[in-house]
Image 1 (cartoon, helix red, strand yellow):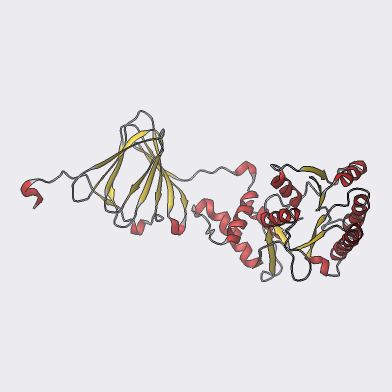
Image 2 (cartoon, rainbow, N blue to C red; image 1 turned 90 degrees about the vertical axis):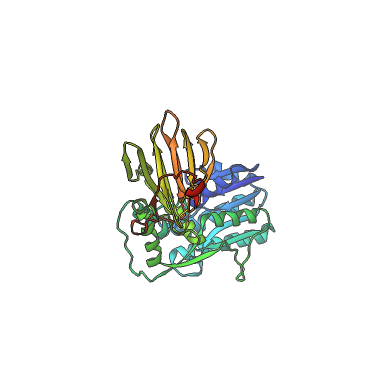
Length: 378
């Protein structure tokens, strides 16, 4: 199928193209740089149209009509000379308002409805709320894009009314819905317009608070709580706005002649991840925990993990190597050690079920005990 995408290099267009890259469809991509001949040829060949092109922040109000209503009329005229395919338009909730942008979007909707009636072809009008996600443009597509961009760079955010409520929809959810429409299964709302969701309502104050907590995560090591689907989507969006030349950072490491230890991630109720480096012929550990439990994963080098009851008894031994990734559970109530038996650094990822609290470390030094025999066992 030949799929025409107008606004192919825009925010929604890029995400749609990425979703369709592995499909068997042929993509006909039109943007502001396309020539009139390219536009006409794509319209003539199209079997389905995603009309995503439009203007929402022009230099003057007259451009609203040119970039929205007039462009859609031009598209309709070209489509009627071709296969008269179904058309999906990314409109806006602003189309219900009497501002220059909203009026121009409503005119575009009307032009397509008339086309659908004449061509006897489906027209899917999606009045989208504020769409957010990767590849959106700060100071253009949405407040979320602007806030993410500024927060990731330590720039100020200006808000007139922190209690104002935003209605948001995530780009991946929009694209999923658009693909449903392509397959003839769009989601139609009670008002007759088509809808993408789920939508999320949030105050600007709460939105900014979440973004600032994301920006602190590198220094605190705290991963944001992503049990909320919205928080997960917002964090992904924020991450996409990190400056590409500042993606790497170095956590604080505690180092001595034995090696080093660095906390990597605090996962709140899900504990923490750390990395431990043990120098050759060095043994670390010799401690146990009442409640804390851990998982050790050697990713490089060769070593031995040993465990024993604090009161003595059998020593349980596990040989570990980066060549054969193994997860070793360290239950509470076991003295444990890790020894580097190789000639290079032993690198171990360590998960603990709780974030380390110096005031309640739950860590107690203990050497391995000999196995008692005879009267010693009484």
